[in-house]
Image (tube, rainbow, N blue to C red; front, side):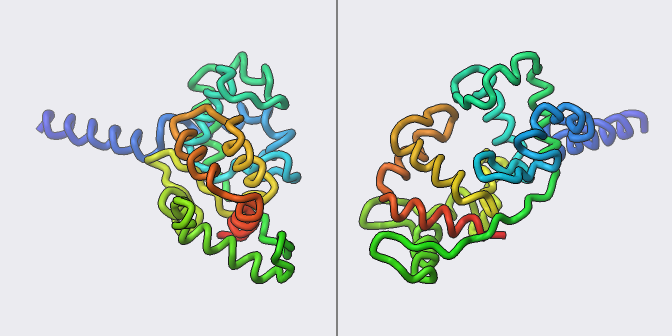
Length: 212
């Protein structure tokens, strides 16, 4: 009987640990105070310069915080801000922000080179996101980020739906220029962005911002 109880306890603990990840969101709430000025206490930044972190994915956020702290990913606004944070701190912050509900930035009516109709611009973004560009070897974004833009937490692919279009565009351009190189999936994103035109990047970024 004792052995059975012990086994059940271990399995329950293991499942609970796996289900909630390695970070503690309750502990992380106080630790994100250093982040709230730019990203908001609930992970929904008020300006497009700073990305929404709410519901982005605990594994992805943790990895990015580690890259920033190590200097592998350079973000000027975050220089030195994580120097005193332990790896557990980073995981707790990631867990807290991942637990928050992301607000939707919303797609806008935009014009693109050769496309003056906002609806056609939105359709171009949808085609790229859902079908890629076979002619240029661009895979559909849905393969990693899901049809609804909710990402893939086990694989560490971030949830993009509702993110600011301006921020997504900035990151895609950084990947294309080879400026963003840190992380396990940087090569994948560099390969995708390398074959996207400015027009396609702007269109798909705008489409993603409206996904919910």
